[in-house]
Image (cartoon, rainbow, N blue to C red; front, side, top):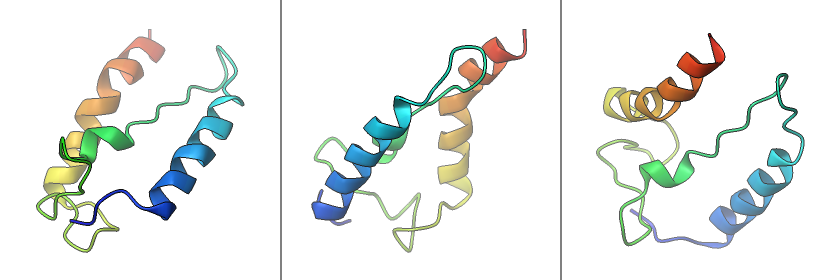
Length: 75
């Protein structure tokens, strides 16, 4: 997959700005993008074949990444 580029840097900056709007008890912000990247920073095609949309494996990774927080919020 493609290595980190200008677009990913912009997304990182955007996510950092969005995180500032999280309000405890009202809005929870999770930046799980790094969970989808290989150690070398590339995006594997086996979870995002078109490098835009997750497939079933990618959605499972997404669910696994948010499940602990969702469970905590449901208490």
